[in-house]
Image 1 (cartoon, rainbow, N blue to C red):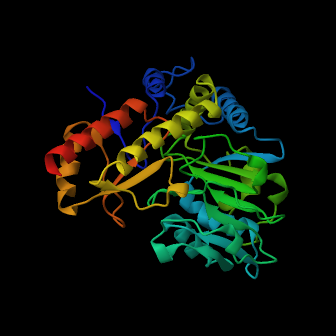
Image 2: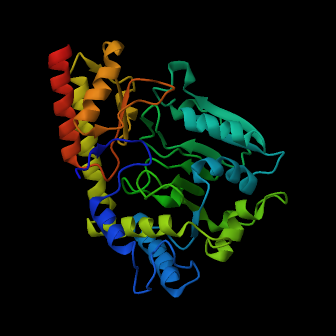
Image 3: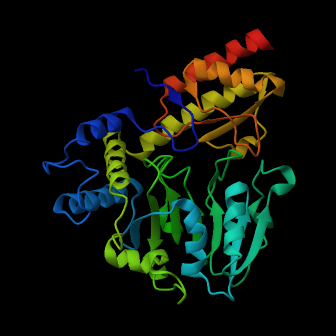
Length: 360
């Protein structure tokens, strides 16, 4: 069987070495005589794995002991509710930056639980830029400021960490986490769905500064309370053990490759090569301001949209899978997370050039 180059925005590609390890462990794991999918989350073997996973993640991101690391369920979307429930009272205001579909969804959910102040909004140019921070209309008493570091659909990425003073900074980093080094100390809460750079869907990473624990309002369900998970070691109920296990392997793999500095340079080079190919053509184009183009998600359109279906069909036949753009924007999108090798970028560029030659 031949593996294709998977450009899906998520669930996304997983490193080949990790997949091979998973294959070996599925029938029998860690001397338990059981599959990793069968083992108890309370077993010594799995508790050791969970501890190791947290320690390796702390190494990768230089996370201090001032932060709790939680492995939860519900995806990043559940965090749209958990953040206001844990950090804002119903009469408090929370600041949000709206730069695309995911921050827009986060705002809609937060409005159910608190007052929302949209400090900046790039909808006026179809979410193709990030408003200059000098013009943000921040509240003086906000419970927190929330932003989405990378808008997966539009391919817009913050090239900076917002300056919010003493206000807790909250970020959805589902598409950028582990793609480069990060100054965690700048944040109150970082959350990320796993299915981009962490592992399979089913587990959600939350990094929360410990002084923000214990603020959840009384109506907050136990399974949506950060403090409850902190006290239980993320095992308040049965966690997704298989997804946690794969995440642990991914963390090991990243450390084995030299850490996030090495990964960042590779990701920068991959994205730069693809954007150069798009910009050097009159047949393809990318609508996003160059300064805020995503390293992880590269949308592009053809000069003649009537050729979209043909492009996708031929790309799929060539082993270039899941290039269709999100239904809300159309066109194409190449998601090039950590596990996408440079060879995949080269293969895509070669295909694009040949398609342009025969159809342009």
